[in-house]
Image 1: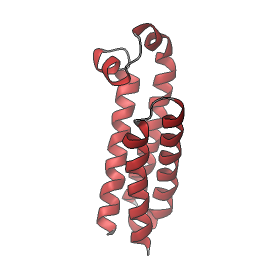
Image 2 (image 1 turned 90 degrees about the vertical axis):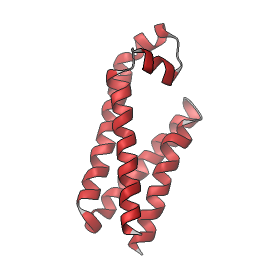
Image 3 (image 1 turned 45 degrees about the vertical axis):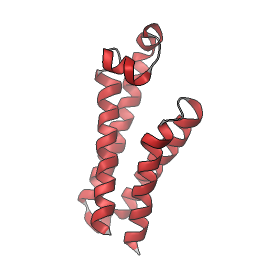
Image 4 (image 1 turned 90 degrees about the horizontal axis):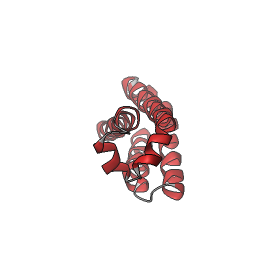
Length: 120
């Protein structure tokens, strides 16, 4: 169960690295327009905010990788960062786009549940 918890945690970390790349580097590119589905003029004005949001996603990914790297002793760190991922995902789903619940919060919740079960 521990290996599965780590694997899911790392999947969540990879997702957040992907969010970082999208928000910081591809926000104003065609892929960013497809993913986020906002009018180009809004996306252009929001680019600095998106880059900031991408940076925060990078911090979440770094915390998750750090917790995984520490092994069983990193469970509290993983739980903290997974909790942050879930809260951010729920907030994003409530305020921006419902699909964020499934893309961000759900994987975080699965990883959190597995981490709790693996801790015993």
